[in-house]
Image (cartoon, rainbow, N blue to C red):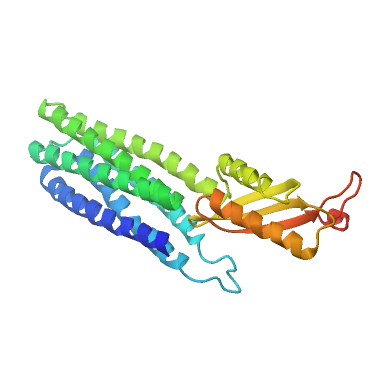
Length: 300
């Protein structure tokens, strides 16, 4: 609940900042006709609107597990990440289309000082939002929020490109504005690749291998653990769940084996950041040639 609330707070604050930035830039686009600023405005508007699916995902993630969704609704956050990637792709396509159209049909850009001012405001707004989203996203373990922050960081750079376009237009280079607009589309595609990789890895249950090493070290350091079997970690929203197997003394009672398993889970909760729970399977020590899971071999 606490991490979801923090994520929602980050979303609404960044939505307000980027929304105000996009509205201001749209007004300047209307009076200047700058296609470079138009691309930046569409990017800012798209970035602001991505707060909506993420907010829905954070709210869904608060719901308790059901008999159908036994792990809860945390994966809605990963689906929101897919929506964000699609929004980034659409904004890149629109920016590229407008830039190519302006290159083929040049038109003068007016009110260059207003365009330059809007570019500076866009840079400052996006840079602040990017740092804020990335910091909160990494703190609560939200890949979608981090991807959104990376998107905003690139928006800040594209705003500086708009400033360069205004300078080119002032020098009489009519091609400068649409050329920068096309460059912005290319930059957005770079962000798209990075965000898609981040979200795709989360959908495929990828985790940082360092977390697996931390988990294994915690297991081996737990009293009563003779050896460590498989270790599996997966993200569900912005919380981790673990499944692992440990080897215990074959002469241990059920109560003793259970105590070792509970101690293992307790050690993991302290060793792995944002771990929600762990399922620990205790295997009895087996001499060489003995397989306590032989009955399952045909089902694997």
